Length: 180
Image (cartoon, rainbow, N blue to C red; front, side, top):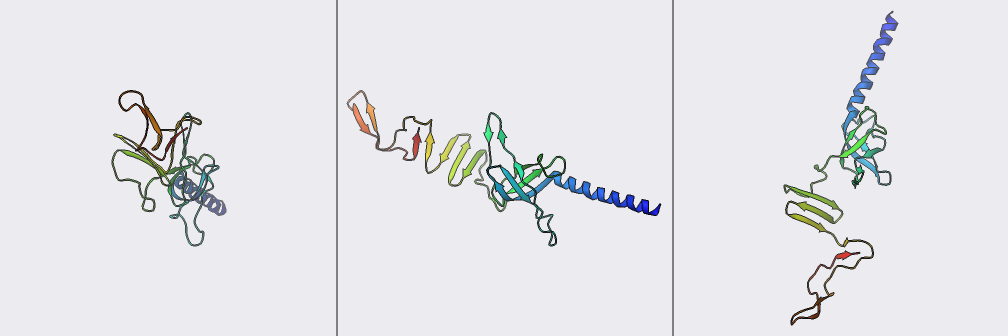
């Protein structure tokens, strides 16, 4: 009977350890270690769980939060970016999802202004505010393929009436905006 009781207690201890790990894995804050842009999967590392003997625990590749219905959105993840990994069943796998956590000490916010939405990709910046929208880039393409170009500095404008009738050059305009 003593051996049976010992084995039962050992089995219950193992079950408690397994359940505790599943609970920790349901919501895990991690740091992005690798990102596969073709598969849109990220490998997360939890430095708080690591130790000298076991190294840093890594997740398998986890799907990154996005949107893929009528509106499609995707965020590229960078190494070092903080993530919240959700694993509803407690095990990292196909049902797991990685959500970017936003600015932190290592990855600063692009702004400290209220009521604005900013997206930056490299040197390109898209800013929406209550008063307007800005797109800053080395080159901006508007419209559809094959469309007419936007009037640019040096292009001519036709004035049809008055003493200024005729073709006149545009002397001030955007030099990096194009329509197709």
